[in-house]
Length: 198
Image 1 (cartoon, rainbow, N blue to C red):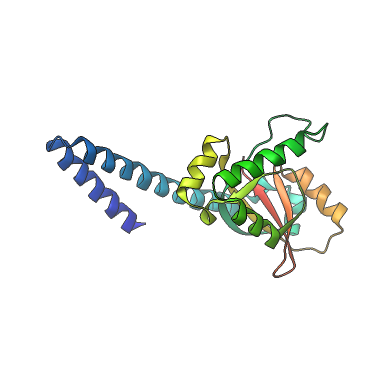
Image 2: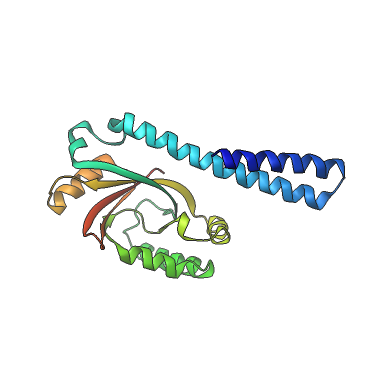
């Protein structure tokens, strides 16, 4: 974090120099750099703060009676594509949604990475129908997906500590989480719940 602060200080110093020299091109470059550095620092600190809140106030995320089911293991930055209607199972909405998602990911050169990630983490159940970890794709891909209406979101990753039947796990997740996915991490054959802090 201190390295990031040093970079930010250097960018501010460079901005002052470019303003004194009336160098418009260099000024824009430095402003862009300051915005990017500040945004990165903000996102990292926000994750740290939310993880702390999660550890200290797990009952806000999860009903007290279900605390023994979940173990918070990590948090990740994702992009997700929100649904735009309430009754998305009606008609062919999800089919059209899937086609648009695929087209947008392909246009942003992120489809292969998306498919590879979700093959390694197969979805069992949930109500998120388009998402990808931000760390896996380029900044250009992220920015382009944002223009398509994808949203940045923090995702809490929970391991399942108890051996539950699937219908029991579904019921607990529906009760506790608004937006989530139950997935199976293929490599370790581990069931996880990804909770999207929308």
